Length: 135
Image (cartoon, rainbow, N blue to C red; front, side, top):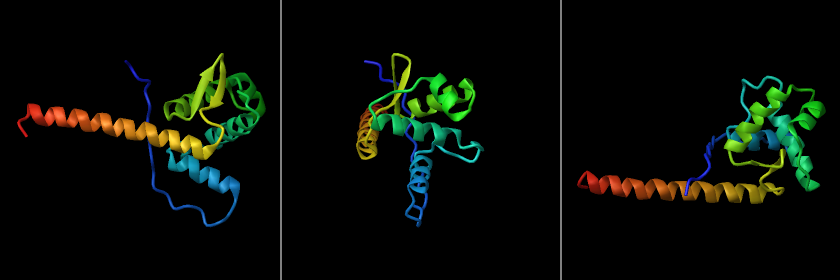
């Protein structure tokens, strides 16, 4: 079985002191390596927020809808959507993009399972390599 590519990035960043949903969402995404300094107009953050809003309504959005809503080019949308897909946060169904889970705590739980499976695979391969090397 071939698994989909998944880039799991965790960055330890100090949690914001201010109790503000936007700051916490930025921290959330930055901790997952999604929002960075190169994204000058916060495109990825804005896309993530729109997908989160749509998820609360059990809806997906097309790249054209996102581009119109956010006044961004479709190319910019696709660039950031690929990043969100690679991170395991977004899925595609019938040309519509959905957050993998509408509840962020469930989403993190699923990412944690992905990470644990990846670590387990790495550990098994490391054991095989160690055997081949005579350890």
